[in-house]
Amino acid sequence: METRKKLEILADAAKYDASCASSGSRRARAEGGLGNTEGMGICHSYTPDGRCVSLLKILLTNYCIYDCAYCVNRIGSDTPRARFTPQEVATLTMEFYRRNYIEGLFLSSGVIQSADYTMEQLIETARSLREEHLFGGYIHLKAVPGASEVALALAGKYADRLSANIELPRAGDLVQLAPAKTHEEIEESMSRIQFRLLEAKDKTKRNGKRPFFAPAGQTTQMIVGATSATDVDILTKSTALYEDYKLRRVYYSAFSPIQHSAPGMANEKPPLVREHRLYQADWLMRFYGFHSSELVTEVNGNLSLEHDPKLAWALEHREFFPVDVNAASKEALLRVPGLGVRNVERILRMRRFHKVTLEDLRRLRVSTDKVRPFVVAAGQGPANPDAARHKIEEKLRQPKQMELFAAAATARTGEL
Ligand code: SF4
Image 1 (tube, rainbow, N blue to C red):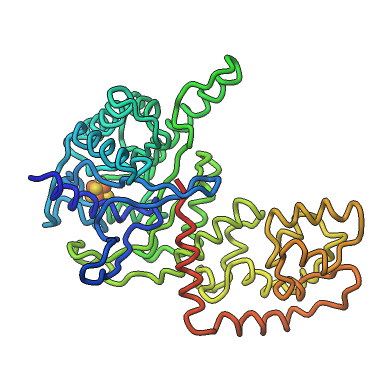
Image 2 (cartoon, protein in one colour; image 1 turned 90 degrees about the vertical axis):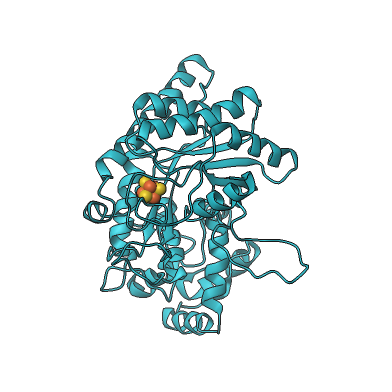
């Protein structure tokens, strides 16, 4: 099969992985126009410092011996198949890099023969890039569930980041939909990677020189909406994974009903805004001190689709407000809708020298319209959370506001 055809198949098959923000986009191109968003295999991601980088995102092969019901590449699917050799992927990466199309590689694969054999193929690609082509760019490799400790150790030697996908939040769902995988096995891979990361950190402390092992850490992905699992199930699992394996990120990927899906699978995509709310809630849990159970305000265990989780929490807990910006603790300020971590730090510094007024907040570029109902500042009258609710609800009901908001935010959520 021609390289171009293989690339078409394997780039398209990789688009279901959520680690890159621009994957899965569809846009019609005018006749004679330029640009293509579908199946091209180049996606954009963001480094933790906000830099946008482009990656060649492909599968080594979409042949797979497993039968995960939600996956287009499962053994029972009649999707067209292709396979690259490690050398072909290394050459393609270098050619694209030299043409300035990409800055790195995101490589995953269907499972062929066994977990270790597949992992060997991924490692060989990364090794060839690093040692034969002297490629110094970014490489993200998938950790195949069930891969041995030796294989994972080698993968981390060549890759900047590793990711073992947890797939579904509830162990029982995985048994039902992906019988060849278990949470125990996937978490065993995470635990092995974490052990190597800690070992590298420890050696750095002792010798002063950091041994190369996946310096960008590990991530995972969870599929949203393929089963009846609620947002609280998803967020509870994420919290446990962050705590147990110190993951850099959990990615949430809205289930895409696929042409070749297994019988009985959902045939509707969950609303994109649900995926976006999960990213917001995840952020609040990691940086704002919220617990998953606090954020889920709906009776059905899901996040509000109408309001962002922080605002939804504030509207449910009006007794908590107003918060005095001149006296409240850092934890309390972090719960004010419209105040971000950086501005809370600035307020805490500022109030050591003088009383903070609304004008000061404005100077910090805080939206005073948004925070005013929830705070008391120097020289300001009493707060009114009811007025806030009304104002914000009005705003959110403007046509297309929600979709635009979700699309913009989804574009920001891809991080390497
Ligand atoms: S292991 Fe499962 S999810 Fe991964 S490619 Fe194979 S069928 Fe798809």
